[in-house]
Image (cartoon, rainbow, N blue to C red; front, side):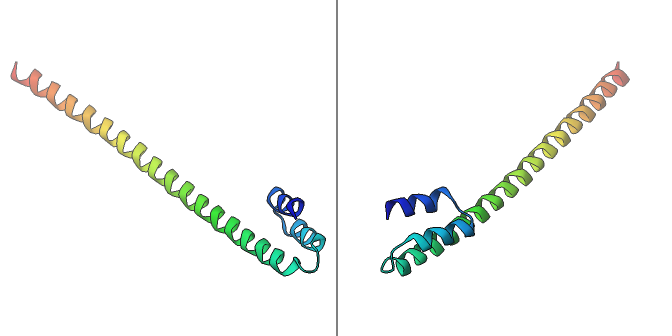
Length: 90
């Protein structure tokens, strides 16, 4: 049974899962198929969560970059205005 479990976690596509399930003994098969399906669903759910986290991280990074760029532009404009005011008062 340990060899089948290791096979499950090493190989995740459906054809290999089917092969692993066929290697199990008749009495273990219903339990093993249930574990295979449960593991596959958990893997898919984990992949969806990682994908969503990646997308949110990317969006957040882009927003932070845009804000830093805007901040730099505002500071540059303010410094220019301050310099012009200094020149005009002297």
